[in-house]
Image (cartoon, rainbow, N blue to C red; front, side, top):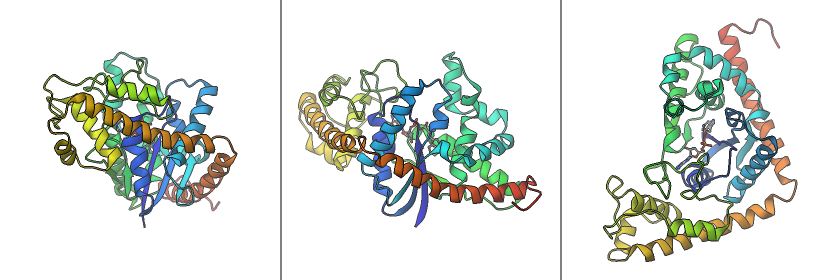
Length: 329
Ligand code: TYM
């Protein structure tokens, strides 16, 4: 089976965007791939996290992974901070990267453009992410559209390392789904749905009250044309709702356009709101069972052991090739 790896940050509450763009696809890949899915808690430290909240968000995320359908028997689930090799390889990759290429990363550029206070962690974020990936030599990295550029940097760094020190890393391929890889804000469909947003009217949270989430769908911004068709440029609101509908129902966009021909926006939204509500209800019921026991600790413990075995081997190889190691450990 080919290896696949991905992660999600435990910052804020997990959104419908994270679910559709990442977690749901992970579930669909688990039977055909050897999967490593982790919680990117080191990346979450690039902005201040209130410790109590971080602890809760981390627990919630692992419970959500399982509630969404990831099977710990099939998938290695672990905390990034439990496998310290990520940070060590991250440093070597930082040393291999240039200021120019890191300055071109959209995530960093956006923060500069918004005049936000920027910690150094944000700047070197992509090299740690490259280490997360390369240390397991996965063939595929499933991510939402916004993370594709980071996976591309990981490819560049892998190629650079291989060229300089000889063939070491597999060149990973980003897997970005055609539909659902960029779920937009329901109030401002020109903008990505994001957990770090100040206003939450346009954002659905997986663990939020279901009626609130349904209301958010009902009041999603659309347009005045009145026809349900996919046209992201001219009809970003309706197109976004169609993408959400398609990924949750398994129906293609074309099928949905057909099904809703001549139907009003109100009916369409109501049916989508019910679909979203049903999906959230299923996840929340399982989440409530999982979050109570000590099942999570056990899974993370096992996952870290398995992940570390591979990560330590890769790191040893890297250090040998770079001339860091001078004696047999
Ligand atoms: P994070 O936590 O921001 O997002 C987790 C995943 O959710 C996807 N995503 C979306 N997909 C569709 N629509 C949206 N509105 C939306 N918002 C978020 C993201 O693209 C991502 O796939 N840097 C990563 C975490 C990470 C990682 C890694 C991922 C750290 N190391 C190594 C893969 C491999 C991040 O911040 O994801």
